[in-house]
Length: 457
Image (tube, rainbow, N blue to C red; front, top):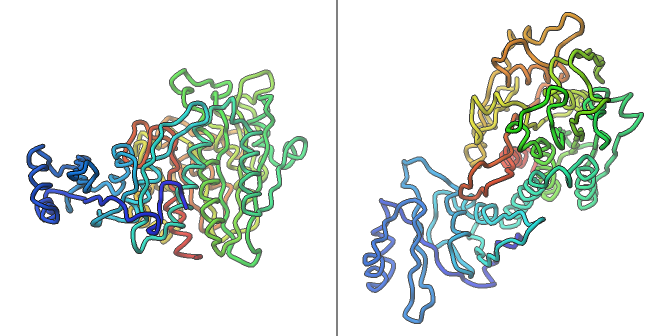
């Protein structure tokens, strides 16, 4: 069980009452006259995020009032995650139902996350009794996967290069009894030319990490995560603002490992494969250059129009490998384009697929899990923007428009599997929100886990 959760046998817990403009009066009637008078005296209003601690005569807590959105307003199912930072130490319980009890409980755990590798965290001995009817073990699996991804993304690149990302993958594989193979050196150069090309400018050698778990007879689900451990932009160097948060450019790899933990811990009936091209895009005399041409694993020749469009190159070789065994479902995650952020902002990852039913399922489940995605089109006419006069394709489009779409279209050249999902994620929370501390974020994994549980549990 996650350390933020308590079992009902440990303590009944201090009651938390969720209030809003429509139910505030009815909730207060559950208390005595003294508590109602106290709430009136301090001017408590049941607005979202407002908190009131109701004392007993002996100084202990009689209960907690916490404001949430009124039904019909724009809801934040993670609003109760704010409580972790506001309550005094103790064990608590939900006295009435928030808008979504399961997500509220999950936010209690994800909101308590702290990145403590380089400095001590704040002591927060605030725990929640798992609500009746909620699977605390499953909530714990999800919270653990989210924390794993956040830890990897938050770690700075001096301590999170290809070696360290491989070590994290090996630790996860060992934890769940999965097989792992790592392709590097001359074999990488021969079998995965695009991955090698991107990583050849760094002294931290590139590699492909390949994890396999589950029965061969079960449906094949393959996750591919972009593992660019730092992206300078290469010879087409980024400016200082663009480079500042490039430690998170392996957010796709971290997301795939976080989701893999959820899947393996739940023991879903799938044959899971996780592919992570782990590289550093650096600048040196051996860096790949604009106008270089490489023959990909799939045999497609690629002209380099921009060395800062490196993520799609490493994904292309990994996707080609994944596609060779025709999985039932193939998913890739990548902090791929600024264009996706311009279109949808930091909180809404872009989703691309040709599978309409899969897209509809993901959109519905994403909203239900408070892990939303938004479908953008694989607009076939834009494929012409990737044309090259000297090779099969360029890695970037002509002109600066539709960049997220043309990046996805480039990836589609390496995929034939009918059920393929591409997520262009941000993997970062710019400013703290309930359930989501500032810093690394594990986007899309919870929604995909729910989708996979519905299909393969």
